[in-house]
Length: 324
Image (cartoon, rainbow, N blue to C red; front, side, top):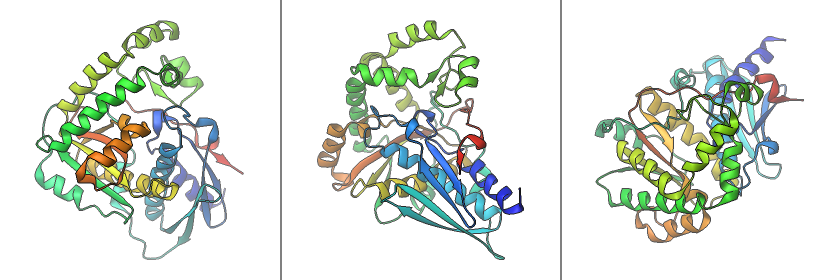
């Protein structure tokens, strides 16, 4: 392996530490002489929760940003091309003598989705101001919403509505269960999905765990747990797009990853509360009825706050995501 290939492998190693829906890791990487192509792995789609593959391409955008950050550390300039026709991302790479290493690279290893209850501590106004100052492209907006903002309670109510829809949908619950790994044997067999450790559950035989989990996958129980998690958090964060297109999804993924890495630097935890964005009818209601977002499309919703670290989600081996 020559030095350039070794560098490209390191970039892919950083890329696959990005978040993805249900830890599906829906990506392939194709190495070329002066570029890395990032492509969707259609075997890892989530056709119920992510009907349009929006969250898939947000994940690919987050992986792209990690790759570009790692490229800067290795002395490469990166230029991202979004090929909407072929549904792929091309990261063009060129060595440079004056490339500045992106300081966010230090957070790639430690970033995680933390589904725990948080400790009720409020993120300071100074930190929120800095987060609000993170740059965005014209097609993306970001709203960091405190509990004092009326929008907080509005979005909370839509999360409840989202749970009522999803937890009454057998196909949704079946897909979710299929993404869960209930013991070490299952994790070793398939390193995608939601592991028992990240869910805060003990390792048990699959048939036992499924019976227990099914008893909790009900609207009332899901809402009871989620409302506690929301109230233990500091803020909600809503990302919107103008036209809800593939290009915007990739752009959003890149902005999201920089936001997550920046919060990681500040020891701020995050977890997704994306239910109302995943249900078209609710997303359109929010777009129409929540004046603050000015008709933009609600695309991604998460909560932030402070919590003890949680176990990390496993990752596929690099060789399993690189294709010829």
